Length: 170
Image (cartoon, rainbow, N blue to C red; front, side, top):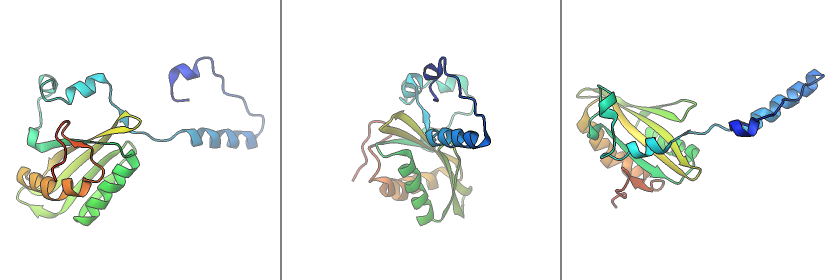
């Protein structure tokens, strides 16, 4: 029902009683499963550092060391669960939103405040997901250390590749 071409010519049946209205609402909610945002061809091309043109359109471009991404064949719900597990393990607060965005914030004060990381899950195909991680607060060195020593090893069982082409180092 979410695909526009499928709804062409579709007319919702009119219910005569309140009982039937409740039944239709239950059927509609059963088919509305939340999914991460899909990446189109332009999004996928922009993931390549050589083709990323975001610098032409944004003034506040993040440095390369302030962000990373990985691919996974695990479902988005499993990725969210794993991120939540890592957050609790390393005493980070974990806040998720309905659109597969996550905010991790360190409990300890660093050199430049609390380390804060945003993660967003995108669907490339039904069986392939891209997760973008972005430092949104704290020190870059602390972020790099956390990613290399804690986050990457903690995610190794769900990660297919890191940063596009570089596989996880053992």
